[in-house]
Image 1: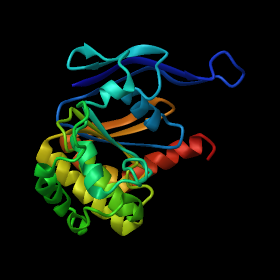
Image 2: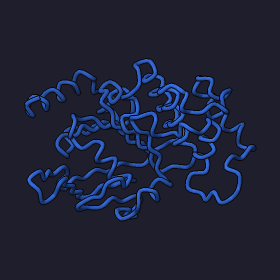
Image 3: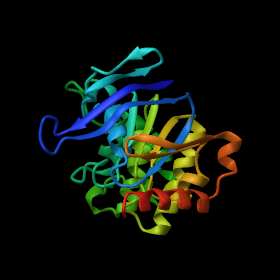
Length: 257
C-alpha cells in the first residue's frame, strides 16, 4: 500500500513567485489498484508522480510504502521497485542502442553489471517473446537501433521494458499523449493487459477522460493540489465520460479558462 501523508509542496519559496501546490495533501493507493488520475494543467498530477518517484523533494509530509517511510530515499533507489513510462517516447529507451541491448539493459535493472557481457544470449528468446505480444514485429528486429523506430513502437517497448523486472508500482505519466489515436489505443490495450496479468499497482495520469473512465479500478480528479473526485469499484463503473467532462468544464470556468 502506498500512502501520501500530509504532503506540502511549494515552488519558488520565499519569492514573489511563491506558489503552494500541495498543502496537507493525502492519498492512499491500495495494492493491485489501477488508478487513473485526471485534472487540468497545474492541478498537481505530474508533480504527485514526481514526488512518489523522488524526482522532486517535498517541503513536508511523508510517503510510506507498506509501512516504510521512503521520503528520504533517492530516486535511483526507488526505481528498483517502481517502473515509469513517460509522455515522451524517447525518454524510456536508448536510441543509439539496439532493441536487444535495450531489453538487456532493462532486464538487469537494479543489479550490478560488473565486467560481464551486457547481453545474456540465454535471455534472447525471452526478450523476443516479450516483444511478440506487441504485434509490431519488433521480435524480428533485435539488431535494429531503437532510434529508427516510430514513437509508438518505442513507447510500446518502454512499457514492456519498465515491467520486465518485479515491481511494486507502475507509474504512467501521460504515456499516450504524444501518440496518434490508433497507436494510443494499442498502447492502452497493452497497458491494461500487462497491468492485469502482472497484477501491478498502477497510477496513470492522463488527459484523455475516456481512458480514465474505461480503464482502471479507480478514478481520481485533481484540482489545485486536492482531489475533487475519487470513485472506485461499482461507483466508478457508473461514471461516464460526459459526467467527468462536465465536472472538468465546471472547474475550468471557475478558474477563468
